[in-house]
Structures are given as C-alpha cells and as structure tokens.
Amino acid sequence: MHLSTKLIHGGISEDPLTGAVSVPIYQTSTYRQKKLGQPGEFEYSRSGNPTRLALEELIAELEGGVKGFAFGSGLAAIHTILSLFQPGDHLILGDDVYGGTFRLLEKVFKPLGLSYTMVDSRELSQLEGALTDHTKALYLESPSNPLLKIIDLEKSAAWAKEHDLITIVDNTFATPYLQQPLALGADIVVHSGTKYLGGHSDLVAGLATTNNQELAERIGFYQNSVGGVLGPQDSWLLQRGIKTLAVRMDAHQKNAEIIANFLVNHSAVAKVYYPGLTDHPGHEIAAKQMRGFGGMVAFELVDESKVANFVESLEVITLAESLGGVESLIEVPAVMTHASIPKEKREISGIRDGLIRLSVGIEDITDLQEDLERAFSVLNEER
Image (cartoon, rainbow, N blue to C red; front, side, top):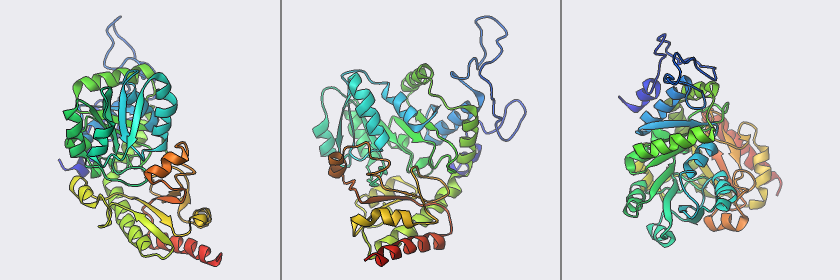
C-alpha cells in the first residue's frame, strides 16, 4: 500500500463494531467489566481508549513502529521518552533543538540528575567528542528547528548503535510522509501532532512510536503511569487531519520552494535557510533521505533592527507561534519559540536575534508573495 493511501486506510480506519468509516469518538472514562478481575481490552481511558488506539495504530504503521503512543502535547511525548533514563545518564542532542525541548531538559530533568551536551549533530566528530561513559541516547531533529539543519540519520543512528545508544528523532518538520527515521536506523520517533499531522491549528497533541518491542513496553508503562494521554476528541481530530497529510504537504512544499527562491533573490534578505535550495549545506542528504524538502523556511534580513516592523506589517501571513497549519505562520525564534534558550547558547548554534521562521501555508502563492513584498516595502519607506 502506498503511503498516501496508508494515511487514509492505515491503522484502525473504521469502527469494527458498526463499520463506520470514521472511528467514533468514544467519550468515556471507563468500561463495563463482566467478571471481577477480568477486564476486556479497555478498562480505563487513561490506559486505553478506542479512539486513541486508532490514532496510535496509525502513527505506528506510518512510521514502521511496533506500537504507537498519543499524548496531550508534543512535550508530554518527549517527557515520557526522557523518563526512560535514570539519574546519572547523559544525552547528546543537537544545538538548535526546539526551545521547549531544551527547557524540559534544563529545568525539569537536569535537576533530577539527567545531563546533556548540545553539539552540531551534523558532525560525527562532535558526537564523538560529546560521548561519555554515561551517554545513553542521541536526540536529533532533522530538519532542525529553527535552522533547518539536515542530519544524516542513517550514519548518525549507525554511530549510535556502535556505542549502544538509543537514537531518538523528532520528525515533526518532515512528518512520516516525507521521512521515516525508523527505516534509517532510529529507535524512537516523536512528533508534535499539533503541527503538520493535525494541520489545521485546532488541536494540541504529541505522538511517539518505536520499532523495538522492549522500548514499546517501557514507553507504554510511562505513558500510563504519568498519564499525559490525548483525549478522544483530539485523537479523532488528529486522525482526521492525517488523512489529508499527503495533499497538504505537497502544497506546503510547493509554496515553500517558491517562497525560498523569492527570498533568496530579494535585496532586503541576507540569508535563507531551506533544504530545497541547492546551496543549502544539507541539500544532498535531504534529497537522499526525504521525499521532499518540507514547508519550513527561515531567513535573516539585511537590517536586523527591522525584524519587528517586518513581521508586524504582514497581513495574510500570521504572526504566531506553532507551525504546520494550512495558514502561513511567521515568528522570531529568539523572542518566541526559542526564548527559553540563553542568548549565548542560541548564538553559538546560529539562532541570531534577527532570525525569522516562516511556516509556509497552502494559500495562493501570489497572495503570499504580495504580502511579503508589501512588508518589505514598509521597511523601504522607513529609510
């Protein structure tokens, strides 16, 4: 079955009881038990819910995992995955990960005894330099947030296996439609389902899956024990969003490629980050391990001092956090999504105060270009 078909028919795509082609929202907290001590498949909705199960089976099938897990947010998913590790364990992670991931590690897990080292994870030499006797995992984003760095996942995962490390990949930007990290050697994949998988900016959710049965059992234990599970209403919405992922991602990346080239050729733009550009440092790797280059673009203005005026002058493109919705969203990472990372750490990784991140939506491309040009014109008028 082709992936675009699997998005619609994968997992549990219809109700086994009635044949309904949309799995119903099982809005219940508990289930009748016919005999004492002999519950059925479902006993309490924190532990399992039919609507959530349909979603979990779907993400597992799409990513090639043995079991999927749905959470109340992407950070709840990451928190559960990080709960696999013990005080004294050490992790290696990329130097421009999502700010919420950094905050979770720095403010929640570090005080509990977990340590980490941030490196440019594109370089195996830097991974080697960060390795310690206590290192247990390699945590990667590719494309990364917000600089769209591309990691050679196959090489990185092979290196991690040589050192008995678990490879965790945040696949939010690429989605399983464009990239499947487990097939490239990763052990665990996490998603913010809020973004492209949901696709309509109307839910908050997190997903995880693994192709390792032992890890699946451990993740399931922590999911149930911590309890940050996704409710049935949002599980249904997310499964519905995934059904149109293929057509949406095709539209996102078609627009993103045009916008990236538009920005490259604009005199007010100093630098553009987009894996689809042939001069992007990770272009060839992205072409090898992805089915497309995605819908995210980052760029810097020639005059950094005009960033606020630029983003505030846009009318069609919305100034807001998050990404991956049908509408175009723009933000300034240093002030918004990555503000929790200290300035000196941000700048070392390349996240400068003037960096702008654009989630290119599926609006008419002419309207997006005209909106950007209008904002650039406002900057010219201020000279």
